[in-house]
Length: 561
Image (cartoon, rainbow, N blue to C red; front, side, top):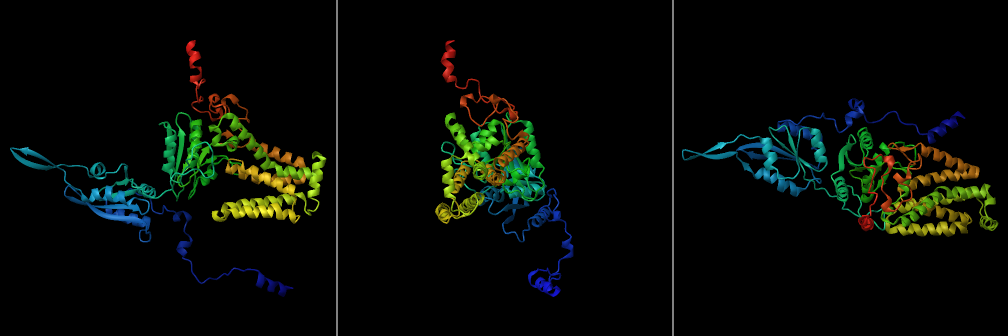
């Protein structure tokens, strides 16, 4: 038996080799992880000697192997004296036209001499004025709209990585950061995932300054504050914190700043990363921050008193705090009459309930509570399932998993062959599965209604959440019928009651109960009745509009009195 065991181990069990042909460098094997970060060189002040600056920059940016780092030495002539200078930028992020015409040409073609002519006893003399080289270059030789003086190499790194360039001049211990951005970016387009019929057709893009400019155009007031910070030790990703100075609660703004400034991560490349890092509770599947690509939706929440977070490189903004009813609302609700908007809200609520509970209720009724089904309908269901050899839970799971596969394939498949997925799904799920007696027609109807209901949920994250919990309620309905579903709902409701988003209860304004006259609710009122901002935000300006907003309607009657 031992020989047989050794034989099987030899052929079927992998044993890693203990000897290798290559040798690891002992000095590198004990290197600390922090030594491998991009801050391997200490942050020095800029030297007054250009040669030292040049050597430091060559080491920091690995110019011998980096092909896109531009280091252009040149000379400038000031007061008859030549100064060695250095231009630093990244190819592809700067505009060559701006650099050549508004930086290098003025500096290289200018032959400056600080002389003033004066006359003494009829003879004209010239006198050389003493001046400050740093101020002269800053004030006269760089014809650009945005020029800043920087004194540290960390500021140099941040400057050129954002698309600007840096000018070094010998004898000066400061450098000049010059705005010459010229990298390509996507133009403003219509929203792809939050489509509305009546509303703005602009969407955020990946460029941070373009997104902030869109918000500035919508909210035309100096009270809109946009503060910049960086997240990521290696990526140095720019993040903008936007809020209304005269409306937003100061504690909320401070909490957002505190969380963003206390992230010890190497990189952040999208708003989804930031969302996961600063949300209150990561163990809950429910979204706790509103994510939107629509500037009009972000502007509405800003004016309500919330805080908007924009991440460079991501076309989605984050809005905090987020409560449950926010994820069941659409930006189009504010553009419609309240009767139309409330009808859509009722439809979305029904769709959310069906997405979450319909498959579980279907299984529970057929397994435990058949007395709730009318006799004629029960005979129809029994007849359709008479030739199906599997239990109802297997049918539902098979169809739900198939539906999820088709949904995911439809997202990932190239667009030219996208319609093929619909044809395959209709043939396999709609006809072949029933013909082969794998599932019953009523199960297909239940799964199809559930899928359509999930498409009606406006928020992508909440859609995912309900799809996850749907399988939990399928299991509970199969194990204990209505009792299991009731226990699941009670547990989930208790968990939601304990969930907060930046200090705000997730079930506001219903739990805890607040004054509905001074808070938003799921159903909207007429626009002239929305006089108050939500009291759970504790804004600086509780009133959103006057008690009589339509003065044109009451002006005559008031004037008569």
